[in-house]
Image (tube, rainbow, N blue to C red):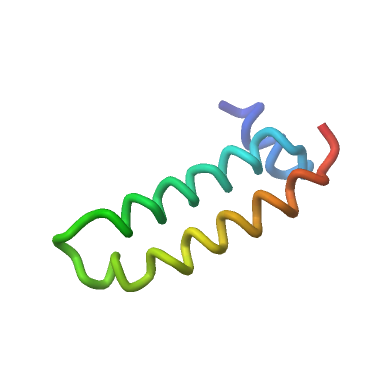
Length: 62
């Protein structure tokens, strides 16, 4: 687990892509759930942040 946090601190591609992918999945989940209105309201921005983050971190070194 410490390798994951070390990769985050050293701006490595793998851990940051995982964070961006989790944000995208969380945004899609928030979009599809019918119970919590605030989650549905913020689902697009969470998905957008995850997508932009994934595009940016794909240029980080391995």
